[in-house]
Image: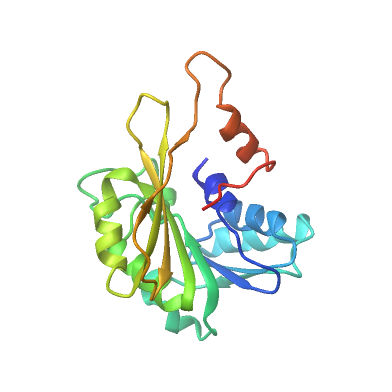
Length: 219
C-alpha cells in the first residue's frame, strides 16, 4: 500500500530524473516509472539480494532502459554514490529506529523496518540528492510528522502534507510529505486520502483508482 501511494505522488516531468532512497525490490520505483514513461529513474538499495531482484523486475517489466539500480547504503550519504543531483527524490524510510521499541518480523526484514542511523540519515540523503528547487517526497508514520518537518526545514520548505486515514472517521496513520529544496512557500495541509469505506468495498473509490493506476495522488 505505501509503495503504491508513494508511486502515485510522483509528478516528475518529461526528461527529469528521479531517485528512490531505499528502493527494495522496486515496488514503488517501477510503479512510478510505469506512470511516468518519459522520466528516468534510479533506485538505491543496500541489500544486494533486493537490488538484484529490483534489476530483474525492471527487466521483466521492460523498464531496464529507464530504471537503474545502484548498490549503496542510504545512511552512507548521497555523496558516496558519486552521482549528479536529481530533480526529485522519493522514499518510504524504515518506520522505526529503536530496536528496543519493535522487533522486526524476521532478521531478513530488519533493514526494511529499522533505520540504523535514524530518520535523520534518510532526510539528510534526500536533501543532498536533489538540486535546488527539486522535490522531496516521503511517506511515513503520522506520528513522526513533526520530526520529518524539523529535519527537512533547515534546507527545504514549501511543505505540502497529505494525511492518509484508514477511514473517514479515524485518525491518519500515514502522512505523505512533499517539500521543495530551498522552497519558501507556506505550508499547506491537504485533504486526507481515505483508504476504506466502512459500508462499501475494500477500498474507497478514490483509493481504488489510485491503487489501480487509474488516478494520481496529486499535490
